[in-house]
Amino acid sequence: VEIITGESKSSYGYYVRTITTRPKATPLGKKMPAIFFVGWLSCDPIEINPSVMDGWAMLIQDLATKSGLAFMRVEKPGMGDSQGPACETCDLNHDMAAYRAAFKDLKKLSFVDSTQLVVFG
Image 1 (tube, rainbow, N blue to C red):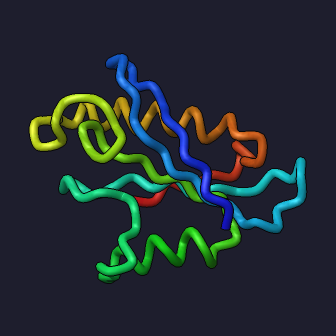
Image 2: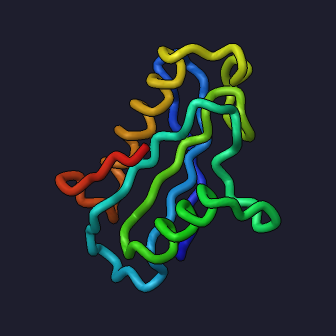
């Protein structure tokens, strides 16, 4: 898959990291359905660590590599490369603002068919 890192600006004014994958063999100009991943409540990172392949990591990896769809994950505020308050102190409003911003950006990607989106969480 092709890995595209990006960032989305939360309505609170800070940026959160996005990681989007798509099949490498995607023809230029072809739009495809996409999966938008809404993460868990914990403050665990969304990046896959090959040395820690638990059930969730295997599921995320399979969605990215075997679904044949575009797939976007969003790092929660205060985690990894994301800005914002520390994840442990974040509330639902901050989390949802980050997800809303990233979801809007997913719909704007040139290879995503914005009429065929799945929210998975």
